[in-house]
Length: 289
Image (tube, rainbow, N blue to C red; front, side):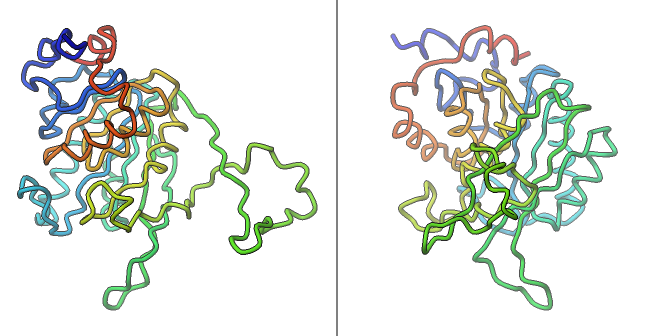
């Protein structure tokens, strides 16, 4: 009998049943995110990373997601899951929402109206798109970063010093003060220009859609949490957030309304020894109502 069989997760979240993926740090359920929210305790999560559908009319799975709503309907739906995020966060917990600027300013206004503290609008570079009609060339997505009051945790994340891809030398001389830079790299800014999506089929879990680089949720988790904190991603997609949380040794929960087999396969390939296990019972008790 495996540890997954020994620990019946249905005892903690009977309406969800057993997860489709379980590891020593996380659980993934194939369900609507609102079902997962309903099973969670208030003030039980330390960080939420959300990459929701953008309402672009795309088809997800077998049509489980209606991604072609009227503006008012889409915003009403967005506000409903955001309200759940706020309720489930601990005081000082962080909420990140990866979204098109078209929707980002609406969601930011709603978050402020709910008392959330604005931290940053991070511009995430999205190269390889194309201009549409009489508009500027769209080259970034918005990554909203809000906290429930003053942040519980804020860790400085550093990035490698940029070098020329041709000669390998550093691009800047830093005004002759190179020796004063931190050896671990540069401070992360609110413009991320190394985040373009993986577009080649062999580097993607779901080859027919844009897939989030694990680097993006990884930075958010590193920035806003400590080891063994609990992370939630309500829109699992290809599982990038769960992979990042697993690597960083944070407990994680997730939901994905469409087929979860690509995420399960990803974990079997990247964390074979940890897949099929279960998070500690104390963690399950702390998050499920």
